[in-house]
Image 1 (cartoon, rainbow, N blue to C red):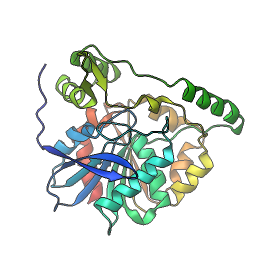
Image 2: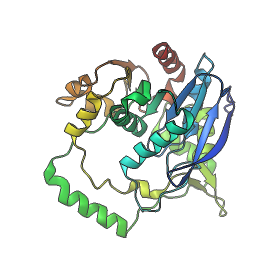
Image 3: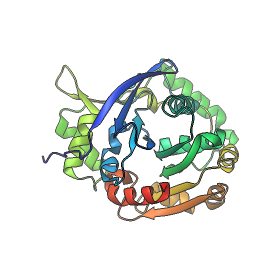
Image 4: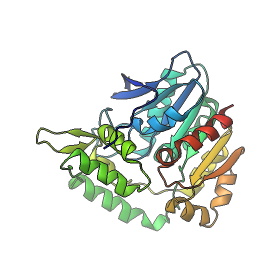
Amino acid sequence: MPAYVPRKTSRSRFVRLRDIDYHLREWGDPAAPLLVMVHGWMDVSASFQFLVDALARDWHVVAPDWRGYGLTGWSTSGCYWLPDYLGDLDALLGLVSPGAPVKLVAHSLGGNMALMYAGARPERIERLVNLEGLGMSGDAPGKAPARLAKWLGELREPPTLSDYPSLDAVVARLQKTNPRLRADRAGYLAEHWSAATDAGTRRIFGDPAHKVVNPYLYRVEEVTACWSAIAAPVLWIMARDSDYAKRMDASPGYAERIAAIADVRRLWIDDAGHMLHHDQPERLAVEIEAFLG
């Protein structure tokens, strides 16, 4: 398997954020302009390596592993609450940029959280790049009893994650999910997405409790209210071959929901799926740096 050789070397540090030991991956000179990146569900900070390598300018990039992912500590509550990500992001930005708003690049789950945060704390975000942070269709209130019952059941019988027999099996899993993923990049990600066990297998760097259903429904009206409070310019990037992006884009009222953001520019990236920072990092880097100014 060809090995991916990073052009820019990352370094790790650990900080205490809201009673959890957080792992931060950093690239570049700390004196360079700050750029924060937050990853999506069942992912890790190393996922941004290809995008960071493609950036032309000098940046100090800081990317955390969200709670329960990568080398960051796990929650003790048996599940993960979306507001905790907002609290963690607020604490992180208070640490890395206490006196100034930040430029933020956020993918998927991270993009959803970044949009909500930018509405709740508009003064803390200078510019926001949202990579496939699409939100959800919204739930009817009548689903609440069944959703809560499902959550209670999953707390009693927690979900699990299966180990993989080898590193090659992890690589195969990543490429099955994303057929565009180059072999060298898949190998790099597999090393950072999993760890060897005493039994010689590979275990994903993720708490199985992330699979527990969110007990509360997705309320479109509340989300739209937060998006309408965003003051920062937003670059909203979607992948042309992302089934979820196409489905959400065609759903009733979705364009109006995005239009609630005062300053938003929408952009589609061709020949890319949901993990567009793996598929087209060079194209993304050009668009991101042009937007950041």
